[in-house]
Structure formats: structure tokens, C-alpha cells
Image (cartoon, rainbow, N blue to C red; front, side, top):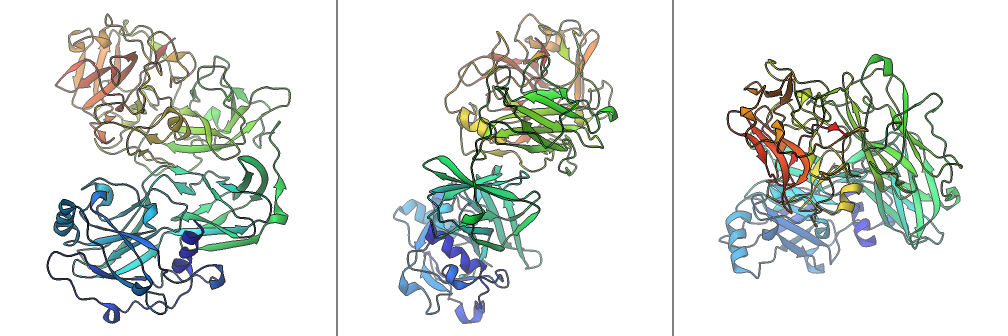
Length: 639
């Protein structure tokens, strides 16, 4: 790790690196061969003053770089390991030949797609994310699975060029400690992402005008914590992809054999731009002893606060977005959903994301102004505390309780609809009274609306999960915009523990489950579970085949009507349901807003499927058994 951190200074130092392509241009290879390439560091991209004594400022033998072609997936990439003969005398450039593949079929594919296209390069190769052949994850971009490394992206500026330019992707914070510690966790106090489960950069030559386009975009779940190892007396560098402005500073917790020992807190706004290097030097004298919080007073005054859990504990709480609620403070016990189980020892609280249920850009802290927690010595439980902004904005938010290491212990959905949510029987179309809108919807869908109001769609849920995902908005393929942490997908299934610790991460198997070991008890037909996403007094609907909504053809039932404007009705008086679309299980793509909907029941139908109403305009309107990885709507019913 230290060697990799040291290399980042190539990308950060104020080096007089030559980029004169006339001097380093290598002739294009004739025939189907691997390319001989020359690689250098971009200037003036890396103009930051760093003392070279802090680390190396040149390529070294043993450095590993991954190369792949524009149309090549992970199977058709190659790793080049530098030797001393490859590197120039000043260490600023290297020239080497990408090794051939031992597999003839893959070599043939490389010659067809890799050597006949723009090419891209990743340093260090160990940080590269796995990719499938032809995967869009590799199209005109580099993708990283590990980001607390000095990650760099390189590219050539045309099919016929073997000269590569590398760009640094990170800003760096560094420190030295001398005490007996072996690891650290850095946490952004304001909840900004400082690390990612995946990160992508796109660097390529625009075909329209020939200029170079560079995008630094994350492509995985963001986390406000990043961890690593420390060696007492040596500089530790924390690499933060893309740069970030930490609105409330950061804290660092130091551990020995997993036990927290010391803490450092930096307050105020701190800017860590891409290419920025912020050495703090020896911080040992600034450290404070870690004290496990036996009590904690919320920074948000709780006098006169409204308890949202008076009617029971849940994973979702409703605060109508009306003027009367502006600036109000709300509390609820930090329990796991519909249970009396404590989430554990809470050390911090954060807003994970907010949305207006549309494609409008979301202003942070506009749905929820602030969040904190509280614990009184006499209480056995922690209390979550949040405050509404002075100007109420309807929307949805997810807030979380975290431990001392910045890991999410549990998260809750705060629902801020335009008006109070009500329930009615609508002629008994479900097993009990149902909400007047979808879970997470800001308004009630209206029959006759042309078109349907997208804010009536609500949020989307994979079967059995407690946390929502933003719904479809504006078009059949556009998700609602969120602040901070966007929804991302895993490379495959995830564990239940991963789902709890990463509420924005979607696991999936095409036509299957999102979880690695299917669990038929996450939601139950027989009662509300700990993972039920509905607010107090409500639950995911029971599947009862005698009820009209769960019939084999609801279009034959009382009150049925459907509209190409994006809604259908059922019951007497009618309940209105939007065609809210869903996130499909074929790769977790947002689809079909205005023309299809999936409404989940709490009842399993198979080991990787569960019952839900599959409703499609001018097509079918019946109970079905979709894959649990698909994210559909929930219309909560009363318990």
C-alpha cells in the first residue's frame, strides 16, 4: 500500500514532465500485435507543490498498469509490469510493449477490438474493477473497485497513437502518528462521500471537434468513511477520488487490533480538490482519547420535539410537508424497524440522500435540514433526532445511524408528502384498508389526469428490503434525482448485512434474487416483519386471492379503468394507481413509467420470486410472480 501511495506524487507534484509527442512518438505496429506504448503524466494537470522527499516522483520497476480497448471488457485487458529497462533515465516516462495473451481466443479478440480502437490504462492495475467482455463498464472509461489508492487514468488520443497521457483522479490528505495504532477510519462529518465501492473516469478524444474530454464520475455507492492501515512514524495518505468539499470537516478514529484508541476532529469547511495535497504532518499531539458515548446530547434542541414512534417502531416515518411543520424537530428510537431491537452503539448520524421524486436538481438539506442522535444515561436506547427546514420542501430522505467506525448500523426513510396520508377500503379491494397513495408518493394519483403526476409514483423496493430506491421520473428510463449518494448496483447478489450497511446498493440476479442466500421470511404474509418498509400502523399488503387487486384479471372487477395517461383505477369508490414503472432485474434499469407497474405483496411465490400485481396498460392486469431483484411499488395497508 505504501508503494502505491507514494506513486500518487507523480500525479501531484509540480513536475516538469515533457509531453512533446514528436519526441516520444512510437511508430504504429503493423499487423495484429500488442502495442508498444509510451506513457507520461499530464501537465498542467498535476501542478501542485509537494516536497519530493514525501514520496517518489518517477516510474519504478514493478509498477503494474492495466490496458484495455474501447470495446473491450475485463476479459480482454492486459497488465503490463514495468522493468528498469522500460523507464527513461529521468524516470518521467516509460516505453514498453503490452504483453500478449496466452489464450489464443482472447488474443484474437484483443486484435479485433483492443488494438483497433482507442485504448485506456489504469494505475494501479490492482485497483481495477472486474468487467465482462463487451461490458459498458469499460466503454470509453476506466473503472476502479478500490478507491483509497492513488488511482490514475490514462488514454491515447486516437486509434493510431501509442502515446498515453495519465491523469490523477484523487485529492490526498496525509498525516503521521507515532502512537501504537494499526488502522484508521476517516469520516466526513457532513456526510459527503470520501470513498466509493466503484469509481469511473472517462477520458477520450471527442470526434466532433478533436478536443479531449475528461469526466470524473463515480459509478458506485459513495461512503462517508474510508479506512486503511497505519505505520507509526510514517506518512499515511488518504486518497479521495474526484475531490470533495467537506462542509463540516472530518474526523479520524485510530484503532489497535480493532479497538478504538484515539480521535482527531477537524471542523469547518475543508476543500480537498482533485490533485490537492493536504499534509497535516505529525498529528499525535492533537489526538484525544476515544470515549465510547455512554451519553450524547443532540446538537438539535429536542425540547418540544414530536415523537414519531408513539404508534410503534418502523423503518419509515411520515412528516407532511406543510407550512405548519417548518423548522419542527422530530424524534424516534433507534430500533430496527418493526421491533424493539437496538441498532447498537451509535456514534454519528447522517442524511444519506434526499429526492423531490423528479429530475430536478436536489439541494442538500432541503427535505431534512439536519440530523443527530441522543442518548441519556438512564436510557438503554439511542434516539434519532432530525429537524425540518425553515422552508418545507416535499420529498423523501433516508437517514442513518453509524458506529464509531462510520459503518451504517441501520437506516430509516423519512417521507415528506404534500399532505397527510389517509387510508380507506375502496370497496375492499385488498385484505385491509390501504393508503391513498404509493409508499413514498408526494401526492395522490388522480383519475383523469393528463398526464399522470410523476410525484404520485412513489419510491421503489426490491422484495424483502426495508430501504427504498428513488422512483422513475419524467421518462420511462429516468430515475428521480437524489442528493449525495445515488443508487448503484453490485456485480451480482449481496448479503443481507451488505444491504443494511449499504442502503443504496442493489444486488441482483437476472430473473432471480438480490440476496446471496434467498430468505423467504424478510416479508411475511402472516405479519409485519423487521424489514417491512411501511410506517407505523401499516404493512406490506397480504396476498389474498379473493380480493380484487390480487385476482387473475383485475380488469374484470368493479371500478376498473385504465388510461394511456399513466394511471388505472379499481374499487368503489375507486382507488387510483399510477403506472409507476419499476427497476428491472435484467441489469437494474429504470423502465416503463406511465405504462407498467409492479405492486408487491408480502407473500413469497418461490425461492427467488414473490407475488405481485403485474399491471400493463392495454395488456395484462393480474397477480404474477416477479423476480425479487426487481424493484416495484408498495401500496401499504393497515395492520
